[in-house]
Image 1 (cartoon, rainbow, N blue to C red):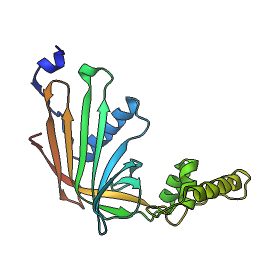
Image 2: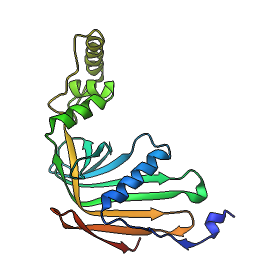
Image 3: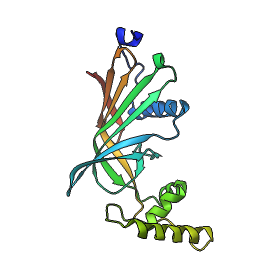
Image 4: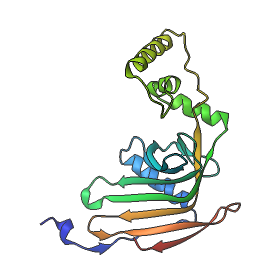
Length: 210
């Protein structure tokens, strides 16, 4: 029988910092050190046409006021979940689920940040932004023609693929951070940070049942 299946213990999140961003930064750093090239996030929003929607976006960094950045369409009512794996050996593997709750997504108008993120986009993403209207019906053959023409124009220097007006970057500002830690053969632990004072960036943290 697998030893992990026949063992039991209780996981504990130790040495909690006063600010959830410190814990978040430590976890994302350790995740990248474990070999992750990028960190996907599941973003949930409330849409007037379809109701609750969710999709996967890529974590792009933090703003000066500790907002998590991502590029997507606008929708202010949001929640976000990230799943992180840390450690290479099965017996020492840590899995963290980070949830941002009671959050609001705010569109960034900082041109420097928008330009930076646009330059970091891969070529296909820049071309997509020029030829595709997200959510609209499309014809594959017509899309191929548009793609091939724009690609040829870019490669010949006739088109610089400037940032499009539809390209937007958002930051998500939660009032609750939820950190869930699990390890093999252990009952998981869970910690929440609740915003006490936005201006002073003060948070209250406490353990909750996993």
